[in-house]
Image 1 (cartoon, helix red, strand yellow):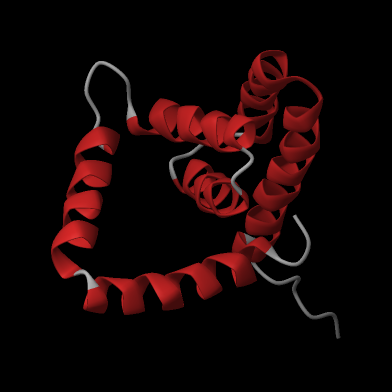
Image 2 (cartoon, rainbow, N blue to C red):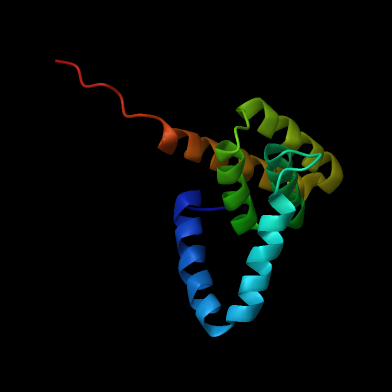
Length: 123
């Protein structure tokens, strides 16, 4: 995945809003499916986001990787949890998954860096 994951999400969000305007019922149905699938149940939301990240890697979906790397962080996933999730994705997806797993870790790290408070100014 080239470029910033944050930029990729912004680009996808822009065109997703446009698509929602053009095909509102279908896009609304997808949104409902997504929210329902991610609701905590026996599996908590963090586990579901990590699963989605692994599937994004094995599906080779750059946008999915960006969204679910960000959402994994938001759900409280640690870098180690992301790494172990990506190892399973590589196991299941082989060489192509390895390339996308590296991209997924990069995306997670980008969102961690963006979430970090800026360094304090020194006098």
